Image 1 (cartoon, rainbow, N blue to C red):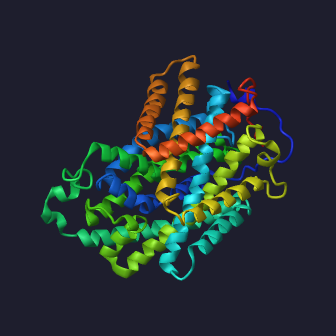
Image 2 (image 1 turned 135 degrees about the vertical axis):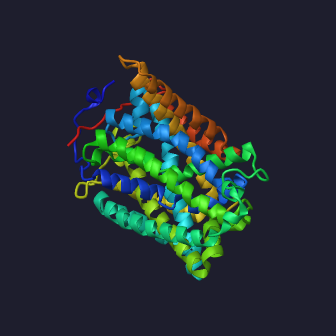
Image 3 (image 1 turned 90 degrees about the vertical axis):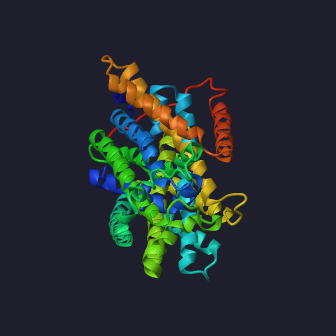
Length: 458
């Protein structure tokens, strides 16, 4: 099915095409974060026996092929529905709906865990301020900025990206000074971050990789802006692949530098969220500890804001096609031309989840990250499958690249998904089951087909 065949007229205001390729790349990098591995570093380190850089690079393989599939499908369907639209149009409307349902969990949890970590990092600076008060502040702050419109968010993202890049350079300078002269220890010292026989295990590597994928979460969100970007058929593919590669190599360099300093030893369980600042303190003292702590805080502010925007547009794509109640989710605010209802809803969910994190036995930053990856991998596998169907099965000319790349991407993503922790898979399965029940009710026992329509370009 072609995009043209699926285009229909729509009533009411649409989304404004105001984003350039540069805006897309910045949005993607800030959602991912130029310092992406710093927040999750301690969790990955403990799971993978210190092989954080290896998990980042293994995850990059799966994400690279998936990024290509996302970009190619965005050429065919420039729609705000993203993976939900691709799977629904190319494979089956019911599977597209379930993909979108899984993505809802993924996208909603991202601003939620950003609210949690922002609140906790701020307590390192202002220990007298109660956690609940900070959670209320950050959830409200993200919502307020996103109600200002997409262009407002894009400008703020550029400032965030520039500042974080400077901090990364400062961190590298401290690491170089710290390890200067360590060549006397021999080449093994510099290869241990990739493989340390004392702590390596294949199970640990895959467990860590299933968490390391959080480093890349965000590149798929680029495709949700297809209706707001200039020349989407070109710019979405370029931005998606470039952001994925840039994030992967920069993240690998950062954690490699950290492992040269820290080695493969584990972090205390109650300090995993502050692991990177702890490493920074070892090489730069009080100054670098607080600089990194503050920068991770700022990065998560940017990520929380941008991911809330992407989540709102995913819900808009589903609501516009009546997979969710159209009167609420498919509505665009006339003056600013944004899905304001969805922005407010995501903000409320982020606040509720962040307050729940006061009871770690029920919910925590780590558990939220694992659940987020459950939904993300379902979407990744679905998009690879959709690219295979469109560009190989239905294509007149059967190109080998259109066979191998999406199948390899889907298989690799499935392998990593299988290595998520049992609690994450259980919680994700419950969420999917709820989606199936809702879909069955919505379609009278799946007797009706859900509508998947791409909006006309403006």
